[in-house]
Image (cartoon, rainbow, N blue to C red; front, side, top):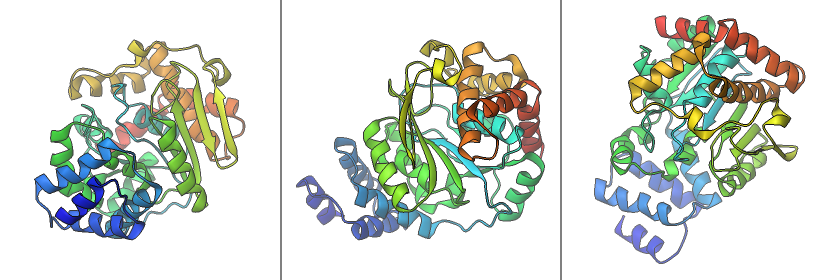
Length: 329
C-alpha cells in the first residue's frame, strides 16, 4: 500500500485494473485501518476518475454474493447520500410508493455513513430483518412487491470498511459505488447524485453499458428531487431542468423535509408519511420521486398518469401495506 499511496500523493491516478486490484485487496483485509483511511482520504481531496470508478465497481460486482431474483424488470431508487442535507429517507419512501403502485422494486441500501439514518437504519428500526438469500428476497418480492438488499451482506468489501466509514463520518468514494453495485442488477435505476460532476461520471459509465437509467439532482445540492429549487433530470436521451411547478408541485422549504435527530425519530416520520399523515412538503418530495421512477419504466403512461398512480399508492394505503408485508415477513 505504501507504494500506491506515494504514487497517488504525487498526483497520479489509478488505471481501471489497478483500482480493481486494490479494491479486492481491501476486501480481503490485506491493509490495516490506517492504510485504508489514507487511501480513502486521497479521494476526499480530489475527484475520482472514470477509470477508478469503473475498476472499484468491477471489483465489487465480481466479489458480490450472487442473487437470483424472479423478476426481469425491477427498479432501484437510490441516492449517493453524502449531500449533507439530512433529509427524510426520500428514495426509500418513494420505493414503497412505487411498490404499492404495482412496480417491482429491488432496493439496495446500507447504514448511514455520512448521515445519521440510511435506508438500512430506518428499516431495521421499523422491525425489518435483513435477508441473506435469494429465496428470502424472492418471498419478500412476491408478497410485498419490494425486497431490500442490505449492502454489507452482499458486498464483503463494504463490510470490511463499514466501521471505518462510520468513524470518518465523511462522504467517501464508497457513496458513489453503492448505487452502481446492486447485486440484483435491476433493469431500471433512478439514481440521485449530489453534484453535476458526479452525474457526468455516472452518465458516461451507464451510457457505455447501455443501461436504462435516470439521474436526478437538486440544483441546490440534493441527491434527489427535493423541490427546494430546480432539478436536473438526465436520461439516455438527454437532460432537462424542471421547476417544482413543472413537476406538479409548489416549491418546498428545506426545513420541512428534514429528518429527525435520531434514527428512531426518523423512522417514526417515515411511518407517519406512509400512513398518510405526512406534511404537504413531505408528501410532495416522496410523490415526485416515485412518479419519476414509475415514468422511467415506460409502463404506466405519462408523467401525469404516474403521479396519479403514486398518489393512489400513498393515500390509499398501498405503500404502507407494502411496508407492513415486508416487515411482518
